[in-house]
Image 1 (cartoon, rainbow, N blue to C red):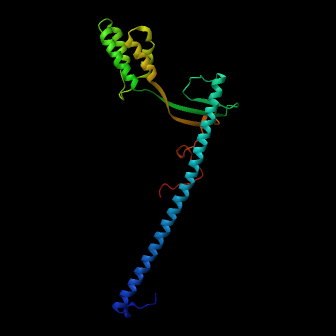
Image 2 (image 1 turned 60 degrees about the vertical axis):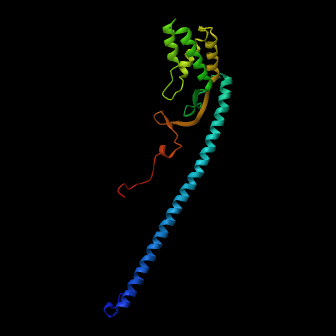
Length: 225
């Protein structure tokens, strides 16, 4: 091809030669594209499958850890190391103090529709019997009934209200106290376990179980690429 004298070729032959060259370039480009896409596909599939395997293993490990810690919670409550009515988490250390396991139990305190009935009874009673007779008590109690931005009762405020259960004998007051007690519920919304190991400075270092918490080591990355 390099010894070909283009001056001796006709226009038709030149066109045919150019068409063959373009076809060769197209096929080479398609081959490179196919190789690139195959490489991309293999990379994504291999990494994603491995990630899925690790995710499944982590799920099994998390379930196993929580089950073991819940079983230990029951044992610790019987031993008196944890309050029997405790809803929160706890931390444990091994005998040497090198390792620590922290168990987190996040709960939310809420009131059902019976609390609304209780509030109606209280406000009826307060407006009828207390507002004019004891303005200070009226102000304190209505303040305890105030809700947050989300429209929820403040558990601490309702607990303070219930401490005044014996303050009045009116049927509406007593019924409201009973409804507030019955409407209260603590719901477990999440559980998590964290693991720590003492470092050379005798500080607890988190044992990372997520990519973001793990350091990148022995890999050189060219930031200019």
